[in-house]
Image: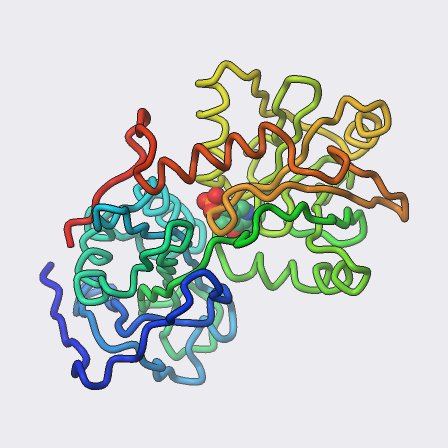
Length: 358
Ligand SMILES: *Cc1c(COP(=O)(O)O)cnc(C)c1O
């Protein structure tokens, strides 16, 4: 499919942020966006790059009522030699299609997803930050826009990609977070939508996150919905524990998001010879190991922050400090390695980075 490009009049392009190190996440957007439509008779069609603009939608658009919408989150990195690269984007494209299937939405050919991003970034290449650590955040999204109030999968979808420059999560070095463990609120249950990157999961997480914030915590650590004992995820990131010299993370059993960063951490740590185990782990076990001192590190993983060390967690009003509230050795090592690969500063032995043809 051909992609039509309708670039903005250069005089109307917005000024780029001057301080790339201090961008608030998700506030600044680039000049253009990619869009295309899907209907049963035409399939995906009318692929276009257009100026970033509000989208007009019928108030009966199905996404607004029944939440049929999915998205992805990845980044484009500008290297010192001015190449622009992505990190394991193929994993995002495939996950997007798995989310689509789960929400009864049409898939998009993965090679075409790359082509769409490249066509968009050809026009907005200047928006990719130059400062190492800063990057261009990419948000592919699909929504049901058919105006219809009967409950069923829609017959008209809109896919779009918007992008915007973001700073490194930790401009002044790591800041270990304080985590609130809840057995009261639930994010997802087996058989539900937990493994899809869909809007509803975020809606489900807001209330508990506000409760946690009011109490002075950064994030919520979710437990499973049935026993309310097994660890699932933290906020919108996956979670790892270093107990002794073993890295443990909950298995992908349908309730958690299969993070690209989670998978990268497992591959790297195994490559370095660290023992890694994907298994169920209860909050009781984590508390026991924190008390006995074998819980050496705890960290969250996700595209936005890469690695986010946990310095303290609290369950049923009882507080537990991890790694003395400092950044653990493995957290730092994993963070440094992944960042260096993303910016082309270290050998990419796994074939994770890909130069965009822009
Ligand atoms: C996106 C997301 C993650 C992290 O996935 P990455 O691919 O590593 O960015 C983890 N949990 C949830 C709920 C998410 O939506």
